[in-house]
Amino acid sequence: QVQLVESGGGLVQPGGSLRLSCAASGNIFVINSINAMGWYRQAPGKERELVAAITRGIRTNYSDSVKGRFTISRDNAKNTVYLQMNSLKPEDTAVYYCHADRSPYDYWGQGTQVTVSS
Image 1 (cartoon, helix red, strand yellow):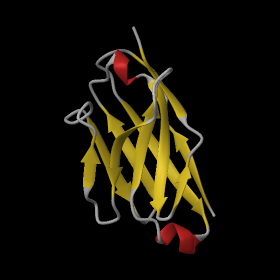
Image 2 (cartoon, rainbow, N blue to C red; image 1 turned 45 degrees about the vertical axis):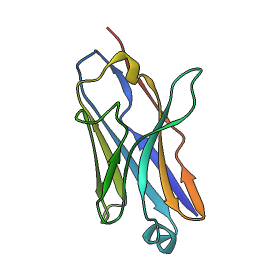
Image 3 (cartoon, rainbow, N blue to C red; image 1 turned 120 degrees about the vertical axis):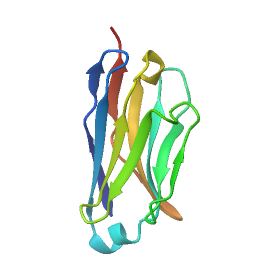
């Protein structure tokens, strides 16, 4: 099994920055077989949506709403994925979830709240 633990959420003013981290722990064989890791978010009353994803080969994918503002990165040695969020907007307010894809299985973190407000 794999556990994903997020950190780094909080309250920030519009235009500010936050950095989210997600550390994977558990069975090392399972962790090493994870392909893509990523971040999803869910705002109140809305469906969960993909924010950014990165494969083990460091290919990245971003939603159009965050391109140019958010950067996803991955440290395979530390089994950790990061999401650097810059130029934050109120519409970025949501619970952010870390996700790991090990098809046909996937794993989710517990979520971390990001609130962008003045």
